[in-house]
Length: 299
Image 1 (tube, helix red, strand yellow):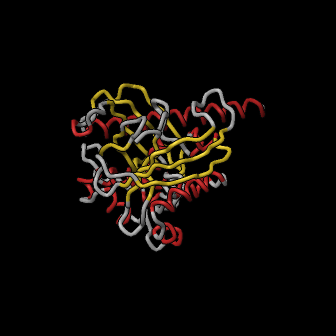
Image 2 (spheres, rainbow, N blue to C red; image 1 turned 90 degrees about the vertical axis):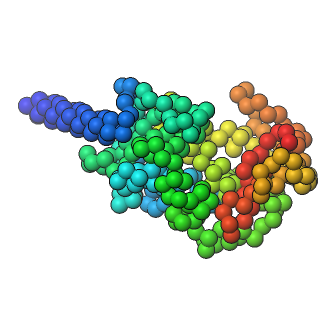
Image 3 (cartoon, rainbow, N blue to C red; image 1 turned 90 degrees about the horizontal axis):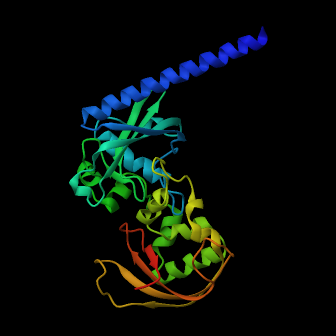
């Protein structure tokens, strides 16, 4: 009798969860349809924990930025995830039949993300998927139109960047050359979070989506970065400022001479030895100092 009771309980729970999932999907489809979006039937559901706040400390994995950005898109249609910060929620990724707005060209493929808490929709937005998902609200408005601010202004106004944070102040006092040298020193020390602190927030958000699956939500940590995992040691031999040729206003470029040793790997193309790296930096946020935009193998 006890065994039969357990089977009935499990069966009831399965039926209840199925009914809840069906209800959530129906609500999501109705919401998307209201704004002219149609699901294809392909979807993936995730249990995720919202960050405790939208504040993002230098080097921290950028999930707070992801949540804050997409909450702005959600607020544009009357939804708000902020009262649920620190709580577990369900996020469902839907593939859509319609294409992205022309303003996002050459990106065309659209996905919708709908977030629910205890059966109630608390967030929803459109994204581009891999390799950089940030896109627009369900009513096809970008962040800049919704907030009236560009990326840099929004980082401070939203509370993501706290200019009075001790680490922010430390980084703001460094020259571009010092940022570069300390970045490579942190990699050599295997202090990965400190290394990432020297990158712009925009660059950090790329780690959320790079090479992720078609229906993935985002990467949850820096483990998807192959470079981070392969470095055994790095020595900086020299840093040289290059002439400004073709770079956007406010961007500086340096050639960096490094000696690097990598862990052996069959699936990692770079070889150990002496290399030139070309590092672009800018002051992403006024008052926060220089940060690395990108590091390339050619000027």
